[in-house]
Structure formats: structure tokens, C-alpha cells
Image 1: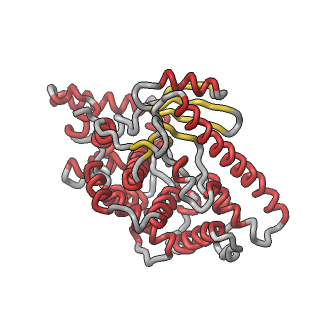
Image 2: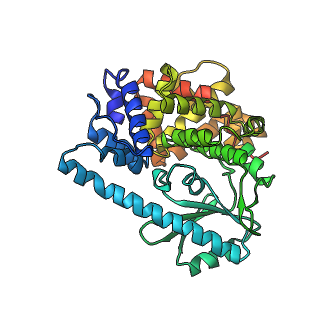
Image 3: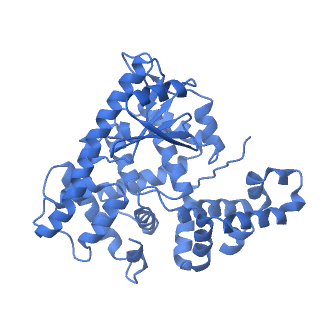
Length: 402
């Protein structure tokens, strides 16, 4: 999609592509034949979006209902077979893991996609790269022994979870907290200080969120990815499906109050608005067209170099004045730098040294190099478009411990 974005006529294909992706998804969910691929959109383009966005079954499954050349059908079919087999393996694994952890007296809860799969019309329509669970009450060692008995192999600990694998399809992330404290302290504290889950009926150790709290967590997780590297359009579909299925029972006041505490109320408003614009074919505007295009380009969980946008939007709000993109990037404000170099609180005069340390760290990091190239060479109009998106969604994340 990146190449498509660069074309001179990029303003025209947006609504066409947005509409046709919706048509494919709806056709698959309604088990009907979709309309033919519109002029100006290629099969390869749709395949690329499906692969990068983890939406093979939704998009490519619908395409197989069309009268395509046999070579195209044979090219698509293996992805659908793999997607179906992976979903079957994941669904069985989640059930088995929950049962065994319950039997072992380990307090646990499945998260994110493992829940969303069963809110979609059928589980295979909602793909996921891994199974996420959280283990409570410091039971990680006990949980690990249960997983070992089930044939899972521990790979490594990353941030706030440990990765396990089993066979060709099963990747398992076992979390010990719900939010990464290195991204935003407000949301980390929100989940760390308040136990928000309740026991699943008929169990003693298996937990779940209320309908409202699951939605708030869904938005928190999405916002984290959006801020760090961007996130893709499957997240919009999640919001639309969830909001549509539970529209008559959600306590909206509770959701608003909790989103306010998390600092994600503006983000949720724009994500929800865009989700309904897309999936119900409502009238759009340039802001939401641009936001859809940006998310389409992000794949599923963004690109490392996209980490610059949330930070630049935040720095712009901190500085309170217009600065060039390069100045914002290379010379952030004292308040911004104090989040990452806490010693500046006692010695603010050392800010230039902190800038130098930040530059050196960035120079040694592949992502840092990509971000510098983005700042130096990206089209200025596109830069302003993406910065405007981040300004409006207003993710004022703070990794500094309070």
C-alpha cells in the first residue's frame, strides 16, 4: 500500500478501496458472493492488505467466491487453509489451557483476540497471531509447569510477558500485568492498582472482564500500539463488531468514565467514528480518509519508524509553539526529556547533554535510523497529515514513574 500512497492521484482511490474492503468483509460474514473487483484496485493489492493486516480469511475468503482465474485461486487457497488450521489449533488450545489452569488452581484470564474470536459471526473471521493470557497472584512458575506438561516450550521474556510455543501454529504470550509500564504510567497504574475482572460462572480460578471493561481494555491495547508504531484496520473492525453486537447492553457512562481515567477518550471517539464510517458506508471527510489510509499502511501492529509520530505530537503540545519537525525531533523540550532522563529534574542545565545521549542512542538503533530518515526525507504534506492525526487522537502517554 505504501507505493499506492505515493501516487499523484491518491485522493481518488481512498473511498473506492475503503468501500470494496467493506464489501469483501460483509460478503464473507453474510456468506454471499461479493461484487467484482472495481477498476483501479488489483488483486495483488488486496492480497497484500490481507496478509499484512492478518485478515486473510475475511478478505481472501470472499474473493474465492468470485470467478477468478485458476492461477489466482491456487495462489490464494493455501493462505485460507493455513488460516483455518491456525484458528482451529488456537481455539482448542485456549480451551485446554483454561481447563488445565483451572484444575491446577492458577488464577488466569484469556485476553484480546481469544475473546474477540467468539464475538465475530464465526471464530475464523477474526485471525490472531498469538494467544494472550494473564496469570494473577504471582503464579507464573506454577503456570509454566502446567504449560510444560501441555507441550509448550518457553522461549523468552519480553517486556511484560513470557513467550511460549508449541507446534507450527501456537504462539502463547503469558502476561503478568495488563499494560506495559514503559509506555504509559496512567494506564499501567489503572490496571495494576485495580483488579477489574470477575470469576467466570462455575469456576474458581478463571476470570473475565465485564462487557464494558473488556471494551476499555480493547481500546487501551489498541492505543498502545497506535502510539508506539501505529495499528491496522482490523482494529477498526474489532471496534465495529463489538459495538454492534453489544450496542443494547453497554453501560456508556461507565465506558466514558473509564476511558477518561485512561486518557483515551479522544482516541476512542475517533476510532469508533472511523469504524462506523467504514463499515456502514457513512459520509466521511478528509481527516477520516487520511486516518484510514494511515492505518491501512500500518499492517496489523504498525511499523517501527512510526514511533516518531505520537512523540512528535506530544512534544508539539508540550512546547506550545510551532517548531520545525526537525527541531521537535532533535531538540525536545525539557519537560519531555525529563520523562526519559529523570536526572534532568535536578540538573536541567544538562539538557544539551541529554540531547546528545538521545542522539547517540538513536544512531545505534535501526529504528532510530529509520525515524531520522523519515524526518529528513518524508513528503512534507504527508508528515503534516500524520501529525494532524496524532494531534487529534491526543494520546498524551507518559512513561515516567509517578
